[in-house]
Length: 334
Image 1 (cartoon, rainbow, N blue to C red):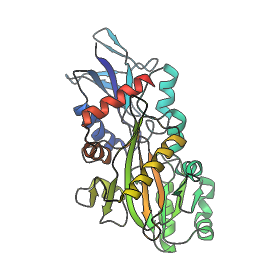
Image 2: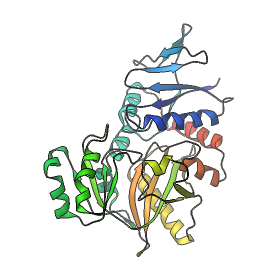
Image 3: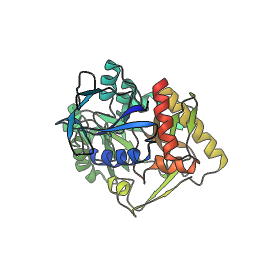
Image 4: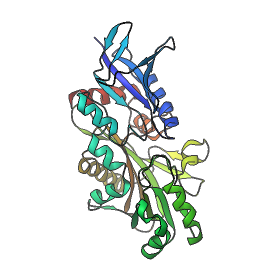
């Protein structure tokens, strides 16, 4: 009998657009001979499965089951490819924990923590050979005086971003103090990010993104790194999703020492944050010092054909089908 997989997509934020693209690619790559895959769309309006005849079937949220032609379908595992709320911030994971359904991503606490960039930095800042940029975490109560708080504590240039956002939505680079108020407004007003803002001093260096996951044998597998070279001011939403604006080199051209250090740092980040499944860590390699600076961790990284993780899986010699099967099997035994 095939394993029944609920492939979760959609979402409550602007990142839903990317979720649909990611889940379409994952669906196309999963081994249908081994897995019976149901694409479940979760939106603020409904949780539903649309069958091949375009018929909609509402999920029973009591036990996350389906009723199709009077047959009750229970899933063996949830494969979460939902970026942003509620799939990346721990809400869906907490629900699945309560009903006892295994899933492929990090647990509820880790997912919730890592959506908060400021809190994540506090947990990983003492990891050996890992550095974090000077920063200020602003809450909604700080909004009236946010510019003055930043000026008193940080130096230009700066990155201003929603503390709980993704896909660089609401993020700006600030080169002058005159640019700061608008950047703060953009970050505070970004949809579904909790009205918290993280402001960080700019680190000049090469930018990398690297995946890591735990396989079905319990072993950590670090994927080859990707270097990101963009024609934009920084790797913003347009650079991420507009063809031609960014050059992505996988595997990255780094020396053996840099590779070994990056691999060990990323493993320690994964362990320190108690991660599960696949995650992606973004970091800078500072030009002057050759030191690694943490940017952020993504616990539901993009899975479009152009996304970093599929690139890295291919560069590692694996197929996407093998990789996604490994994530499903690891979730079933965890």
